Amino acid sequence: MGRVYQILTKWIFMLTLPLFSLMFLFPDATIRFFFGAKYVSAAPALQILALGFMFHTFLGLNGLSLLVIGKPKLNMIGDTFAVISNVLLNFLLIPPYGIVGAAVATAVSYFVANVFRSFWLYNETRIHPFSWNYVKPLAISFVLVGVIKGLNLRVASIWYAVPILVVFLGVYALLVLLSRSIDKEDVELLLAVEKRMGVDLEIIKRVLRKFV
Image 1 (spheres, rainbow, N blue to C red):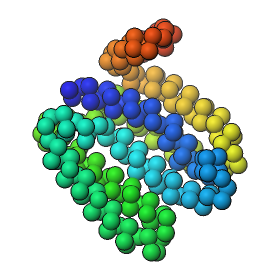
Image 2: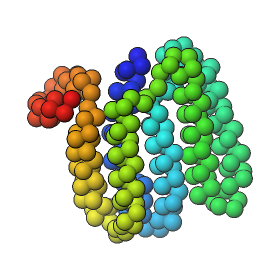
Image 3: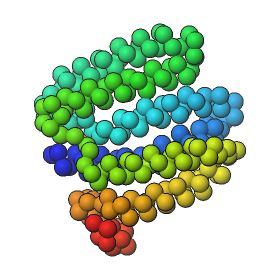
């Protein structure tokens, strides 16, 4: 169960990374595309919310795992702490900071709930998401996101952001392969997906096998 948890967490993180990168690196263009230019002022709030939810993804399916091992009360306690922190922070932060304060409150509640769940999951089962082949992709993503953020790129439309994002993901995928962050379980999971969907992923499998 612990090994499956680590593999699934790595996959969930990497599959979520493109959407997170779009919202965090190009919040103005994202909001303008989905909601219109009059809501662009909410861009900082979107970045904060994206960070909060990505932290949830970063630690894996801790809440569901607590349910699986028969500890739903611990899950409920974590949610209760999150609700309490959310309400208190909303009360404190919304008056002076508005929507940004509300976003911070929500992001912190994600942090509180997930730290609590992950702590108790580890305490009960010694299960955690941090294999070496998960830490490497994490570090690569942090560095690349930091580099692009440091460039302070300003794009007027999401259609200008997409090519940048494609290059970012291409470099990310290459570095993940070169760092040999692929496990044999990743290939096995891909085989299961291939069988379930009825598609031929032979090219992808060949590439992955060379770097396992």
